[in-house]
Amino acid sequence: ETDIVTEPLDAVAAIRSSTRYGVILIHTRRRRGREALQACRAIRPLTRGVVVVASDDPMRAMDRIYMLEAGADDFLSGGIDFRELGLRIRRSTLREMRPTTEASAGPASDVTPPPVAPMDGGRVPLDVFVDELRRRAATPDLAFFCVLEVASTSLARDELEVAVAEQVRAEDGDIVTTIRTGCAVLLQGAREGQLGGFLDRLRSRLDQSPEAGGDAGLTIDVLSHPTDAERIMALLAEPTWT
Image: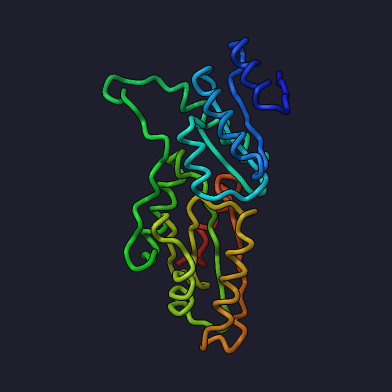
């Protein structure tokens, strides 16, 4: 049972007058981001329900932080996948339903810190990559990421790994490793619909490398977790990774 309103004040009034709302979805465009932020701040004290903010427009990382600080339980933007949206709502609901023990009681941080950035620009051994992937997949706040399998007909595996690592954000938890067919990349917090610019930059950088001679012959397979969780776990078991 869903009620839909188009103005933030109407949403606030509806929530103030009823306790039946278990989930509140604030869907906004970038140009109305300030209104969405104000609505989130007004709604949060009025309900114990889950508040999720979503936008089809790409939003900056700081926008996410502002929404989480305003009381949102989750925030996603850019090319929304409704399966992912449903999964995020269910996970947020389950987190809200978990009993709070005396040991864990206390103010919780609104913003989950990124995984500890590995050394060497995000490059890690294969066994560390696999262990870290499994750990994040099992951790609700870290379970949204993309895995790229990158192969090149022109670059050796080590050259490919170094070039790819230059394009990732290790400080945000991205990691890279070599596999038999080339290299594997975990992009923390990324979704397939947001990767167009990154993939264009990656292809341009690798094509321009001296070893590639203008064409790195790249093939890139993109899998998004948790939507493609089964395919990712199957990929881990493939002999091409070892």
